[in-house]
Length: 425
Image (cartoon, rainbow, N blue to C red):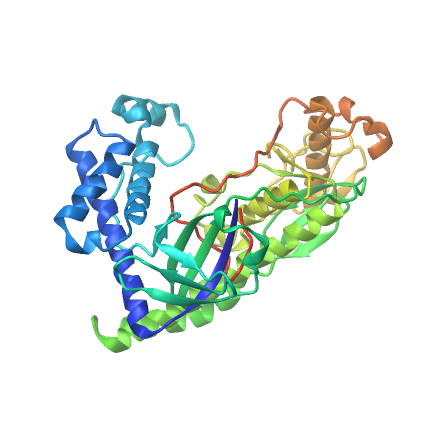
């Protein structure tokens, strides 16, 4: 799946119409959730049928495109299905007891939606320029001009499966979700890399090379605090407070985009220069429970970096392997002995004479386990000896790793993009 995003240029009454469409989509989603709460036996298609009832009972709901109403119902069902599978509450309780990862909380009503999603009807793309889109439902959105760098002429109109209108702090955006399998053939480099992400440096590879951690949030925190104080001083409900909140939102959005763009650029460079990338299979949700490091970990964007590694790895036919992080920092990469050290100890010193930077030692262990996994599964190279200069099948830890599967963009839940005209999965 590809997602192309464009900035929307329109008139004031069109922006108001987009806001109304978003509110209507939120209303339909909440009404479908209420319908499920009152009738526990309903399923996904029952919610789709219920959209017709809402269109009959509420005039403003009937003004929204029928498939856009169905998309809102599917969003509600997505939250419901996470709570319990196949409409059985007992199964959800069992999943919670089994500690299966993922969201399992009781579905909640939405009070601040930011997007409305259309399927294959309710919109027409300009056939000549493909830089304008017209929404044909009764909300009165009309023709919107699209500002962006990507050219939709390379793809058929039939490939566009979804169109989303998204409201952000700095304006409105239109996203096109295309059903396209994009794979690019590249020449193999015959090189592998092991990556250890950190807070002092963004990552350290097995050769000791480090990439700087930009710390966008830390650098912009002074400006954020100043804007937050201005918001708190304004009277609630006033126009000045609304403007101050918009400025604060734009600043947060800028930092978020800087962080994501940096992770994307670094991941692209790594994938282009290597054929196999081994990295830690970190559980960020558990790491941020440490309140002393939570803000720094979130600012480092490790999860974004991993997503882009997996995406570019699939796109360019490279192998990405997630390695369990246990003891990668404690074990010696030279002899395998365990050398216990605290987080403040930044140098690995082993009795075998190996003295390395802590992160470089961890990166070497990560690469070793990653190569062991590739050698055992046979999905990497048929001749590990010739490719890497050592027999990968003899390396330790081969049965403890797993290759990462490619993330798939869900059909209906909202998508958080990367800025204007970014290519995402």
